[in-house]
Amino acid sequence: MDYKKKLIGLAQEHFNQRLLPELEKIVSDKDIQAVITGSVSFGYCDKYSDVDGKIILPEKYIKDARKIKGLTITKEGHKIEFQPTTIDEFCINPLLKSSSVEAWKGCSPFGLYAVSKFIIMYDPQESMARLQKKVNGYYPKELQKTQILNYWRAFLEDGVYNASRDMKRKNSFMFNLHMNNAMWNAMMLGFLFNKKYHPTHHQWLYHEFSGLRELVPKVRPVMEKMLKTADIAKRYGLLSKLIREFQNYARKKKLIAPEYLTDWAKIPWR
Image (cartoon, rainbow, N blue to C red; front, side):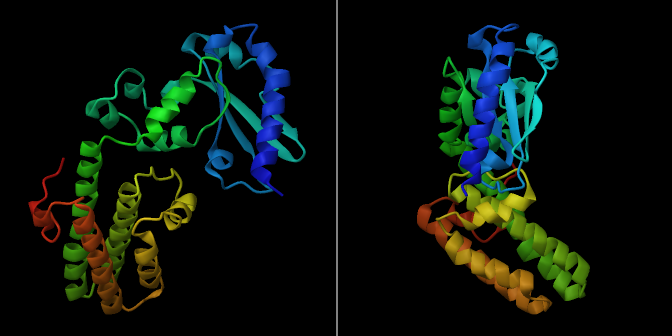
């Protein structure tokens, strides 16, 4: 069964038939937006999933909207919940007024991911559709490269520098900690290289990372071996291979300046 389609249908029916008529008693139609977020919009729903809906309104209507009966129901074994809120919840307000690099810097990456995945249910002015289109256009190239450099520095510092020092000291706990940090930064680089936002929850992070097309098919098997290998020296050898794959890709695509590819200490924090 297509549970995503089923849950969207249940939520849309409930919103249209029960909630929208009540909302229109307290707020103008043009000020109402309704979206589905969470596991349904992210594409990870199943027969146990609930529906997380958001009714986005101006702040002055939130108190009355929260008094509406039927915001949370159970239908065909699924909890369907619509929460009245403002766009402020997603921490992307700067993009509402500007497309500058500074505006993008002021946005939460988690909020950007959520908005990019919104299933829009009600948007009479199409303002949410326009915002989603802007978000899906991804970061300005300048900001994307800055973020790549930041994660690249953290990847090399944890992986090449800290993990190698831990290995010499035979400190397996700190070695594994720094290796895990390196792998986290590698995944963040994978999303940036593919011009994708990363999920907000760890339970979806690796699943979505695995579906990326650029570079990831080469590096994922190496990362999986690293997770399964207990021997410190072997894990470090696999990390070195992982770094080479990233270096080759970044060099080919001109995503990282040559002088920064091997020497993390030269990379300025931005």
